[in-house]
Each structure stands twice: as C-alpha cells, then as structure tokens.
Figure 1 (cartoon, rainbow, N blue to C red):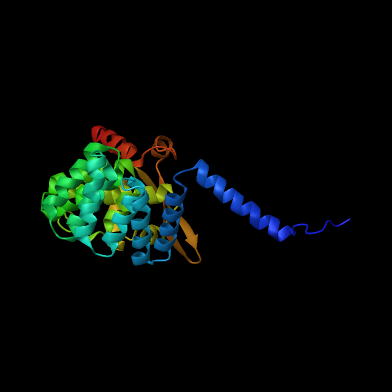
Figure 2 (figure 1 turned 180 degrees about the horizontal axis):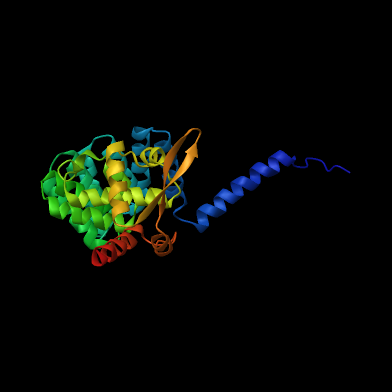
Amino acid sequence: MKKPFQKKPKEEEIEAKIKDHEETSLVDPDYNRKKLFKKGVNLMADEKLEDAAVIFEQALRIEPDNIETLMKLGYVRFHLEEYGEALKIYDKILDIDVTNPEAWNLKALVHYEQKNYSKALDAVEKAVESDPTYGMAWYNKACFLSLVNQVPESLEALKRSIEIDVKNARKSIRDKDFTNVKIEEGFKRIVEVVVLESIRQGYHTLGAIVWTTYLDKADALDALRKLLEKGLIVQHEKRDGLSKIPIYDLAADVAEKMGKEERIVWNYKKATTKTNQES
C-alpha cells in the first residue's frame, strides 16, 4: 500500500546528495578549497586560463598558503605571460618551503622567458640542490649554460639529465638552446645514445630510427657508423623485394647488459669504456 505523502525516489536521491555534501563538508574542512582547485584544473585543461586564475584566487582565500594551489596559479600566470605575478607567487611558495625544487625550476623558467639567464641559472641551481634527481631541472640547467656559452658545463648537466631520464636525450636533439654545444664531441655521443636507445626499443632500420629520433639522416648514419666501430651494435641485411636494406641490432653482450629496466646511459658508458680498453 502506498503511504500518503511518501517521498518519490528522485526526491530521496536529491536529499541523499545534499546530506552527503553536508557530511563531507563537516568531515573535510578543506572540501571547498579542493572543489575550487578541481574546477580550476578543469578550466586549465580547457585552456581557459584567465577563468582558472580567478578560481585559484578564490581557493587561496580559503587557504592562502596552500602550495598546491599556489603552484597552479603560478603556472597559469606564467602561461598568461604575467611574469611579474608568476615570480611573486613562486617567491611566496619558497617563503613557505625554501627547498621546493619545482618552485625553483619554474622560477628559473620565468627568468628564462625574460632572457635573464644568470638569474635563471641561480634558480635552477637551487632546484637541483634541493632535488639532485630532478631530471627536468638538470635539463633546463644544461639549456641555460649553453645559452651563456658555458659548453663543458652544459654537456655535463645534459648528461646528468639523461642519466635520470633517457627521454631527455631525444628532446635535446631538436632543442635550439643547444646550438652552442651541438658541434662538440660530447653532444655527438649523446646522439649515439639516442640512436642506441631507439634500436633497443625495436626500431632497426635507418628510416625507423630517423622517424623516432627526429635526427637528420646524415647524423643518424654517422651515429650508426660510430656504434658499429665501437662494437655496440651489429648490422645485417633484410631482403625487401629486389633490394636489401641494412638492419641494426644491439650486440649480444650489450643487449644483455642493457636489460629493459636499466639506465641506457650507464650501460652505454660501460660498453664504450670496455671497447676503448680492448682497442
């Protein structure tokens, strides 16, 4: 029997949601900030940066020293090219946590955009001091050093960034910030690392290597020649219709040392050292 004035299922659902919202707000005093933060992130994803900035400002009224929110607001200001405001935000984060590596790195990028490379270097140095395993900060440090023509130091920082994250090797190939170091032998060895990693990932023809690394054909061929000379790779041929195409594979001992989970640069160094000692 249906009771008089019985609540409809839809009304019960709405009431349950209201009750759940009230309970969540009471249990989690940070609920409103988190809600605004999520809204701001969604606006960023939709590339509505000015709207996102307004929302993050609202979230900061609830908790002015929340680093997560400040970081997002700084990022928005940076991409809106409001560099002065972005610097103020990163300085505020560093007042709260002077060893925050991300804030130092982002502050460095603001100075980089302003072409103030000495300040960019100072900031990124603090980033790698705060977190020596921060690969992107090492990469940025390498860029800044190249721009001020400190070539040996730039190469060392770039090698360190690649040891942490091998993807930085491929990224450096097309980065115009490394124009000053690309003629150096040390950078050419980084090109060899990129080619070696491409082969390890299963790209065995010249065309596939060029396609995956963004290298010029001539640079890829030069790297392949050097890797063959060092005994790090082997070459054989595959028939393609009436012609034959070169196929490249890791040398057996190199393939064994470079298991999928190991750092390619470390193994490359060991293999190169071994080859040099034997020759």
